Image (cartoon, rainbow over all chains, first blue to last red; front, side, top):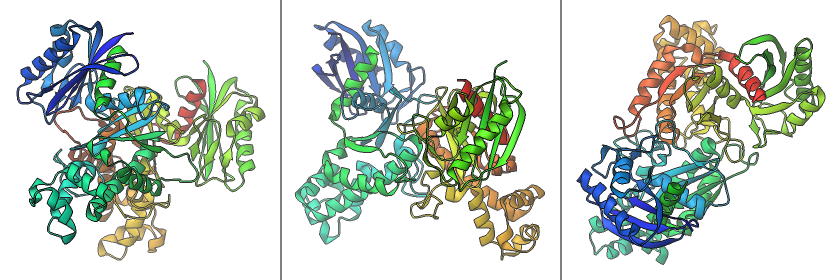
Length: 311
Length: 311
C-alpha cells in the first residue's frame, strides 16, 4: 500500500505522520514550531519529514500550513502566527527532502481529511468549521477543495455577523471568529467572572479570571454548570446562525464541526443545529444540511495533507 | 453557427430569444407571466419557444427560472413569485416542444451569461449580485456554475447582515436583501419622505410617499439630489460590506453588479467598492477582487440559459 507523509504546521506545533491510502496514521512525530524564524520553520519541517522517511517507503509529502497559501499551492503568502511572508515552502521542502511536495492551507487540509476519511466521507459538498483559538474552515464542493481565485477562499471565521461588533484578531470588527471561537468563549467568561454564577468556572481557574481557559468552561459545562452551559450555548447560537448564511451561499450537504471547542460535543452541536434550523431561508421548500461533529480530531490535517500529496 | 433558445421566466414576464454561439440574440419574444396558474406558465413558455423555433434551426432550449431548482436541474421546487411547486418543467417543456431542454435558476443563468459573454468573461471565479426588487446572485467557481448539494446555492441576498434586523421577504430578519435591494431603497426613501431634503424625490413621486419607486431615486441621484445620493450610498455600503464577507468565503476574482439598481452606475459602484476595500480580512497580504458593473443588462438570463442549453 502506498504511503505518504502529512505535516500539519501550526503556530505552536508541527505534527506529522506516515499515512496509508485509507487514512491510517502509522509513525508520528511532533515538534515545537520555531514560529519567529522563517528558515527554522522550514528546517524543522524537513527534519520531521526526514525522520519519518527514514525507514518507510514514502511517495510524497503534503504540508498543511496555517495562513494564506497561493493558488499555485507553492508558497505561503502570509500567516498571522508564523513568521512566513511569501515563502516558497513547496520548493524548499521538495528540494531538501527529494520528495514531491504539495502545500495546502491547514483548514483546507483538515476539511479534506474529514471529507475523505471522517465525518463527511459520504457526501460531495461539505463545510468544515474548526472552533478553536479562532474559527477556521474549509470547503469541499463537488468533491474538490474550493480554493478561490487567489487560493484564500473558505475563511469562514471572517464572515461578518455583527456590524461594528467585537474586534477580531484580523483587525476588522464583528467577524464570526469574535463571537464563536474559543477566544470569544474565554472573553465572555472573564466578563462574567464577578457574577455569583461564575463560582464553578472561577474555582477551576484557581480564583483568577485571567486564568480561565476554554477547556475549563467545557469541563464545567459537562458537569452541568449553568453559566458554562449558557456561554457554550451562546457561542453555538452564533455558529448556527452563521451556518444559516453559509447554507444560503454554499448549500452544503453536511457541516462538520471540529477544533478544540467541539470537544463539548452535544453541548455545542444541539444548540448550533437548533439555531441553524431557524435561519434557513425557504425552509420547508428545500433540502437542509446535516450538522455533524468531526471524527478525526487533531489528525484531520495530517490525514488530509497526506492524501492531497497522493492526489 | 448553432442556435439555441434562452427563456428567462420571472414573476411578471417571460422573455426569450434565439441566441447564437457568441451570445448574440436574434429574434425575441416577450409575454406576461400567468404567475398564478402552474400549467399556464408552462404553456406560455412552450408557446414562446414554438414561436421562436418556427423559422430557426434550433438545437436546444435553456430555461432560467426564478425559484429553487433541484440539483438534477429538472424541476422547480419552489418559487416565491410563481405558482410552481415541485413542477417538472424540463420534461414538460421538452415533451411539448420536442427540443432538448435544461432548467436553471434565473440568477445562475444570468451569472453564466455575464461569465461567458459579459463583464466577467476573462476570469474563472466570479460572483454576480443582482440588485433589483430583491438581491439575487449566482456563483461561477472554477469555470462552472456552483449549485450546491441540493441545487440551491448562491442565494446571496440571504446572507444575514444584521442580527434581528429588518424583516426580509423570505420571513427571516436581517438578510442583505432587506438592506441592499431596490425594495429596501424605496422603504428608506419613504421613511425619509417627511424631511425637507426629500423634496426632489417627493416631487418625482407626485407628492405621494407611497408612489416613490427605485428608478425615481436613481434619477434624483443622477441629478445630484443629496438625499437620493445618501440613500444609494447607504445601500452600496451594505452591499460592499457583504462583499467583504463573500470575499472571505468565495475569494472571487470579480464581483459583477447587475439588476435594476445597477443602472445607478458609478453612484452604486464607487461606494460599494470603497466599503468592500475596508472589509477585506488580511488586506495587503492577499490579492483582492475587482468590482464591475454588469454589461448584458436584462439579456444576461436569456444569453446564459441559451448557452447552458448548448453545453
